[in-house]
Amino acid sequence: MRIAYLNTFGIPAQYRGFETCVEEIATRLVKKGHSVTVYCASDSTNRTSSYRGVRLINVPRSRNKFLDYPIRSLISTLDAMSRDFDILHYYGTDSAIFTIIPRVLSRKVVMSLDGRAWNRFSYPIWVRAALWLSSWPALYLPQATTVDSRCVGEWYRSRCGKAPIFVPYGAKVSPRGADPNVLRRFGLETDKYLLFVGALIPEKGVHYIIQAFNNIESAFQLVIVGGNPYDSSYERWLRKLAGSHVKFLGTVWGSDMENLFMGAYLCVNASETEGTSPALLSAMGCGNCAVVSDIPENLETIGNAGLSFRNKDPDDLRNKIRLLLSNADIVEDHRKKAVDRVTRLYSWDSIANHMERVYLSLCP
Image (tube, rainbow, N blue to C red; front, side, top):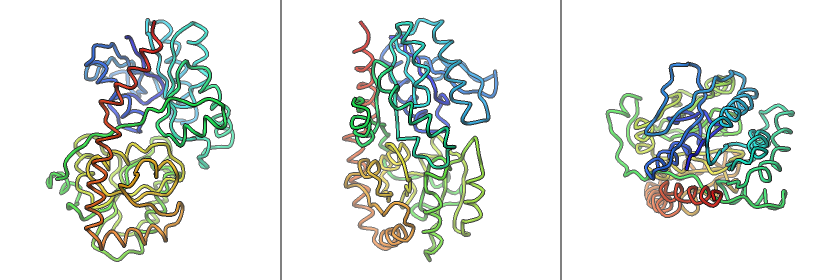
């Protein structure tokens, strides 16, 4: 098959879970003999045109987040119409309206959704309204729509009358044992820090983590990995809020990120709204005990392989962290359960095979 991925930042993944998902699936499909193209956001015309056998088409990006995605989605769609793709796979509710074009032209369209983005209170009201209105065409315009969380899928089924196909995110399983030289570069030691990884936006709840950690007396550090290419105001506020034991590393990818996961004592997720968190899965795949806010999507992801705290409650989070800092045996037990859960339920190989079956079901 000839497959194109649209409406992500592109690969190699350097921003969100969507990009990681596309990279992991696309490179596996290439090995199976399929021809795969990924449309990428680019600030430069000199960006590479291929990656691990995947063809890359670079599309200029805007620095305005709420214009960038729709503009790139439209440009990518129009370009794709001039090419002989069998499958056009869009990521994100905000691109739903543009799938009208390939549908009118009798192209096969797949769309992947994550969390309910219209719940993000930091978005302007008109953006939230547009995203909410897009939830219906996201299910009914494409020939197939997938979702990474059963909880989110149930919301679509009950509100929109149609259930999307459940295809979760995946994660690699890596044995614990971080390279001390990598950690030393970041000023860290194995099992001496707590880790958050994700976009620095208010809905990720990083301020709750910092508030909880600031009042814990320990030799541990809190490490914040992530950024926001559109707006750094939230990060600036977090830096003012943080105590001296909080370290901001910016965006980290590849083997460095894997080592940070493998060396952490705990990984913390405080999201107020979420789909299936790719960062949380990656942490679990690297043998981490996770502490997560008790939203349904997070509880679905961790199962019995982590602890939860009351959403938006830094006091409850602080109590859970203190419990785990003083009980290494509980941490070790959850580490083993996390690896087992990812191995059984979140293998990238099985997820790529599942997505391939979705594509094949649409091709004559």
